[in-house]
Image 1: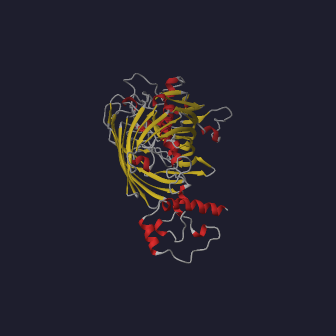
Image 2: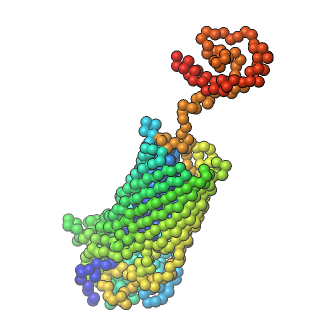
Image 3: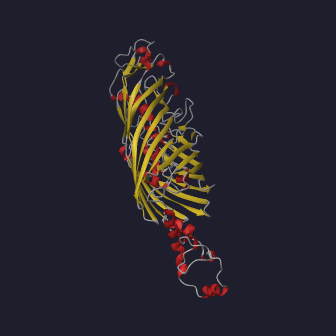
Amino acid sequence: MYVHRRTDLALRTPVTRTLLAIASALAVSSAASLAHAGGFYLAPRGVRPLSRGGAYVAGVEDPHALWYNPAGLAYSGDQLLLDANLTLFEAWFERVDGGGTTLPEARGYHGYFPIPTVGGSFGFDEVPELTFALGIAAPNSVLANWPQEPDAPQRYSLLTLEGSLLVSLNAGVAWRPIRELSIGLATHVLIGNFDATVALSACDGVICSFPEDPEYDGIANLSLPSVFPFVVLGTIVDLGVVRIGASVATPFNLEGTARVRVRPPSAAAFEGAEVVNRRPGCNWMDESDPCRHDTVANAQLEFPWILRLGVEVRPVPELRVELAAVYETWSVQDAARIDPQDTWIQGALGGGLEYQVGPLDIPRNMNDTISIRLGGAYTIERTVTVLLGVSFENGAFGNPWLTPLTIDSDKVIVSGGAGIDVSPEVSLDLNVGYAWLAPRTVTDSMVPQANPIRPPGSDDARVFVGNGTYTMSAPFFGIGMRWRLDAGNVRGPGREDRTDDADEPASAEEPTPDLEPPGEGAEGTPWYLRGGAQRPAVEPAPEVEAEVEADPEPEPEVAPARRPARRARRRRR
């Protein structure tokens, strides 16, 4: 009988590799409102921003500012936003196994669930320089499901992310002390639960000679509750024809305790094997004690700074064009750090094999990403706005670290949309587009098969799971609604329709010279403003009228401007 009692690092790789799956997959749900890709988010979020190719840093003027640039809330006013995007993501992976055999192609897909956004901005007349906002949204991520058959080619990378449910809660404020400047701050909290299921091999190379024998595969499921906060700070400089916007999102560490459930392999050698919790205070020898199956692991993964910069120009009132860049420091994620808590595998090989799963750092070796985005909008007849956009972003993973778990590649997104003003208060938004991801062929994968039994040997003997051909497709479309409760009239020094209030009553009350009532004196004072004066009983002689019409005095031209002022003084008295 082959008995393995080693507890050194070589034996710690397996379930921890599974934990890598959950930790790295959890990256899919990082910093929801950041709207970044980097292998975890496929495209910018929101119907209008995505219609502009994600170029929405300087020109943002609705509650999407919570994610892109909180300073844009100063242009949002009292507004309610509802929208949803549906991405029909599909991926095909034709794997080459450890023996050089090309396996049947596997298809992964994102469930047909729209990604919603709900946000509202509002202000108060007592503090017109401030605009507040609240929002709730789901991360614009790709939670892929792959074939789950026992011999599925991609099973050592991922089976499914089904069961994951994440939501981002957001609150922000913008301050616009002068027309030319606004500053904004938004806080985000990602909460929910993330589930991942993956296969790991228990083939030891002795009683099992084929390392990808499905009978020696165990199935691991990990569930990680999440509460992760971060902050977005932004500013906009408004020079009239040109707006310049910038924002920064703070990094954070994805940390938490994941629940681990492992189904042992079906091979006869593992009959009776189980994964148990041996934490102090847990009677793990008592099979009726539920504590013994409460296996957990601590996970930590670092997430990047997100820097955005955009310049929008408005050469004519109907046209807006923005060029933006987004830089994400993904190189901080060099490894996923996993620490199982008193987790043991026992009972295999007739009870002769048991070992503790120890801590491990899993290499990730991600790359920084930069996205260049160009987008704009053109308004036709003040009722229909046409939006177009295009963007490019480099992939976050080099070939050695690419797997079906975190599919990413250089991508080009082309999109378009329309905004239709149903009324001065209500607009409908539509978009459609396509995300093209460059196909990848990997021949130098460095991502090893997760195996809790076999110590890793030389590179020639190890099994790598990322080799093969990757093809991806991602059309998308969306619909949204904006309700501007203030009909677009924002408060504060930045009111776009701001006029001199003192002039408005005068122009409203000013009569036209042709409608002047008869009986005004030489000074242009109406008869009803003369103290106690009566309306003349005798009309002026026709020749006098003709004389006045023939040679008008300049006095009546200024009289309309003086009359409202005199009426106002009389009303005050």
